[in-house]
Length: 147
Image (cartoon, rainbow, N blue to C red; front, side, top):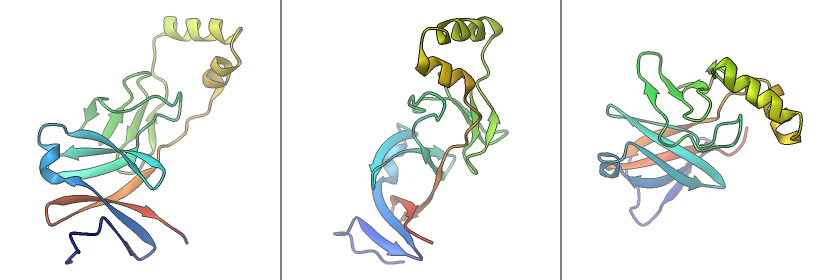
């Protein structure tokens, strides 16, 4: 596909594609966050492929950037609470995997904090994933714009 280099966006099949970066920018930094159409998106370079997910963990809204990857089961593990998500589907693989001691502390704090109580009672929630493609050495992220 030939893209006008002066354009940073195009629409195709109800997907808004946005040019986010040159592919070479991921050589030194394999995880990068971009704001695309009001979405904060974490783009991961895994081998020679790019995966895009929402950048914040749904459990506490903390950044997933810098979280470790497990290539054996296609997951990213939130560095804050060890919640594991499949970076291909967005599915939860393991929800808030913390020690019993950490859980006790959280439940104790929840007695005094409405926000902490909500976090301790929260049901597992998947992360949103986005399409990616490389066109002329640029990484593009696709966001669905309608049914």
